[in-house]
Image (tube, rainbow, N blue to C red):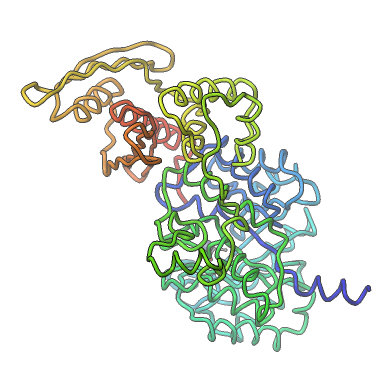
Length: 517
Ligand code: KIV
Ligand code: ZN
């Protein structure tokens, strides 16, 4: 019995989610503190092992978010990233200490020749000494210390082994071997992990972690290869978001282990039915949708179009389905609520979709649902997601009041828009090249924004002419890019909401996250 348990532990792959840190670093993915907490709660529900909540020294906003997640989340460990400097480590622990023994300090330094020479401008011996010093400092706060050799894949192997051995001796309990630039390929990565297992005498005293970027589209394959060589923690993100081409996608990695358990005898503790709610929640918060053919969580991942496929699936699902939609939390019964549904059913369905709302927000969302249910016969999960995201935004500088638009084939489009700016009502009218242009121009004038509208997309959340229209905009100013989303059965109103959402997010970013590391 004890032996079986030991074997299970040896085959258990810890899931370290870095959606809120590496994921959030990517353009357009920034989240405010309340949004980060919502994602963290969903990760808790999904039962990941570690949540990397941010980079506390990067900004006051990041610090506060890590602290709040450390104070609130129960179950998963909470990690905070820091460079190998005393100031970074002390700041990280100040935020993480609220998680007690579940707080993990994650410190790193680059070890490849190219990074040491050009970025750090440090000799290898100095880098080694800084790594050891950092780990000792972190270990003085907590025994839960992770050390990452940034750009490990392009590091000379004997030096990599030397650093890994030294940081384990200094107190690191997890050592991460990242493919920072998404450069490796599966068999090469296997050999790197194997080399460390064979050449680092104290390697068994730490868990080997891997962290793969997706620049060549190989991050999931590389992570699996590393696990086969002995890695027991995989760092990943929901929807694979992250720097440049992103990180290893959590849902793809977890479902690969589950679906191919016949030849990959590893397990994770993840509740896979929470994968789809997590993916949707993240997309709704950031405004960045996954491509329709994305594995596991794309809109078409379980859609069978070709007649021959449909026929096969009707006869026997496993002809074309290697996993069930239910196993990833995709509801077989997409239609959920109608105008006779009560508040209780509404609340229950929202919770299943990953939205835990306090009473005040629930009231607002329920009121909006009732209005929508009156307009539309059928209300789908996607409609509910959109309503909740629209109705639960907080700390907003700009609020939409009213819009009146006149337009037509012979009329010059005119929009009169009323907003509240920090609680004060303001109003103006603008002409435009169509009603959307006129509306956005009026908002631009009232907010005096200098931000550039980079992208404007309109789509419908579900089918039918009564569907909720959904508008996504991307705006940029200086080094900040944000995405805004709005939904309404009226496309002009959805456009105004999306633009205002983006301007609020930009304002949050400019005031709370001025620096970018
Ligand atoms: O990609 C990387 O190397 C990282 C480390 C800081 C873990 O994100
Ligand atoms: Zn990374």
